[in-house]
Amino acid sequence: MPKMKTHRGAAKRFKLTGRGKVKKNHAYKSHKLEKKTSRRKRNLRHADLASSADVKRIKRMLGM
Image (cartoon, rainbow, N blue to C red):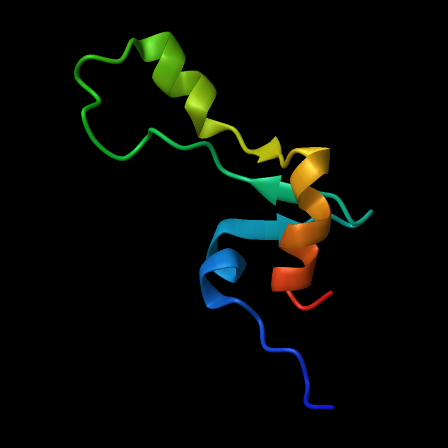
């Protein structure tokens, strides 16, 4: 059986924490920023944890 290949798109978007949780950045922070409030843009800066429904699929894409 050959080795699993890492999904490169997923590898650029997700990171694993020390305890195995999946960290992700928020969407909607790349353009059309003039109409978004400062508060909304500030809240989008911080990373978030991926939904528990998606974690199994994301880890498989990362080769875990």
